[in-house]
Length: 425
Image (spheres, rainbow, N blue to C red):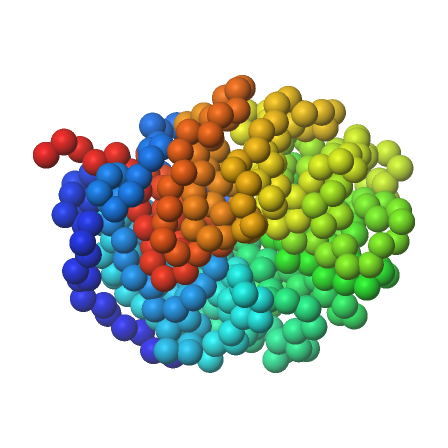
């Protein structure tokens, strides 16, 4: 393990950033879908249009290609990336200054053109920072980059059998860091004490499915079940809830692939709005609304609605103020009522041969959507769809945009960008 202190970077756009960002830190973004676990940010105002001369506060170069979404806590930005062919964790302050870089283990590079060995996003509770990599390395650090412990799940529990690069991010409960590995033959949910690394439990989660249906790249979600912490998992053609204390199954819902079609892999994570989980499946052509709760097999009782005319393969939907926002892989956008599945309004971003891999951000009545080629679109999302701006980042963008106190963090293939409204000089 190598830990490096990095000197201040000479960034072309950092001159005004420190004062602008420090004046309004805007809270925390503790895991990849934000403080509410739904891809929504608190009120802004947030910028609409930017380029190299307008509203780009700073950019910081990254040591290698990673696709994880940055997180933020106490005015520090954390993300993962390869550095010198090793899995690494990086920290920046809110002006783009590099604070530290901790190398952990040998990198396992991505196979997919839009993948990497650093797909899973970090997570923190403000005391411990936890990370997971395709290499199998699971680690916990303090917020100054000091390693507390690390282990390798592939060495302990068997090799990676996913067809593509792992994408499920770790999550934190009150005491543990939890990783879901849903794959063919040996799927499991594993929890480790976040302070010591001691394994709390490893719970099997296996279902028989057609080819690739038991592979999942979706991240778990912490929910409440009968007043206690529970874990919501999507994969293996089942949505299931598990007791966070021991991993035991609380309820499960199947029936997502009645035609037994092969290669219906889970990529998009569910989003929860109220008491409903909206699940995108079927390679972008199926949506299900599942009522949370119950006991045992709730397949026949808790499916509220099904749609076979819409969906999302890669981007995870966002939710805000009782509505769910779907960004489809080719740029169609729908606002849905999660209770009924009905479309409230819909629109479409400009057509292009590139797809959308990044999940959308809802902020300040606007939807931010990053296309794989680095075009970030801003559209109105307050009841009447309209494309407001097209912003070219100049490099590929696969990670989800982050909203923080009126500013956007956009992680590109080579740089981390911060976008916001510059103050008059």
